[in-house]
Image (cartoon, rainbow, N blue to C red):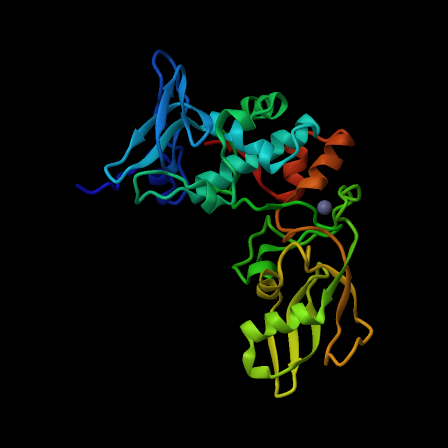
Length: 333
Ligand SMILES: [Zn+2]
């Protein structure tokens, strides 16, 4: 028997995201909450009142064990969000920022649920941490409840949701970031609200040894690495290309790919304001690169530190989302 089954989330997403989802209900009585099927993995399950224990964590909802031993948690969508939102945004931040995050996370999960398998989502595929009840926080749970069923919509469908920690003062367009088709609501524009982020301004020294190791892995044909230059700056000020110069030849590559290869923690963003070769040391052909930049993450969509700043300035969740997703509206799933 095939384990694949269509769930309300995946099924609805598969039909062009243009009409309301037919909610699958869980619980008895008049509970119209929507259920999400989350793959947890393999391991022993201990039933508890109102939920169960798995892998040392308590989870809400019910569980199902597939014939191959994998455990699926069928959980109210908002209960899932109540666990996940505090891992995406600090729960002590203003309520309007948490509400904006909850609406974004809801749409982000909907768009990435997969209709062709026995569960809707795998938290790790969403780059989300789902640890059940222990992760919950009263303030973020309140934001999830206050925005229950709400998502960002554009035209007749759901808006594509993207978010990152800090845009460094200028958000990025999805087209420039990923070479995707332009979306009218994911465009580059100034953001005056994220200056309090510890990553609003940063500097990083990428050592020659590390860069040589990266180049040896991704571009061995260039020979010994002699220089690295970030270039092709787009409207937001982000580098779109990197040129690796070697003893044999040069190679120009995507800056996004380069950031992943170097390590996103070492190179917080591509919004580079200054780059300079490090002073030579010893006999190394290339000592490395000193970079001064702004922001943390890709900068597309919601700037989370910006949402915090806008909320502290009195902005509502709706105003925050209208600012970062221009021309979208808040609607129901
Ligand atoms: Zn920002």
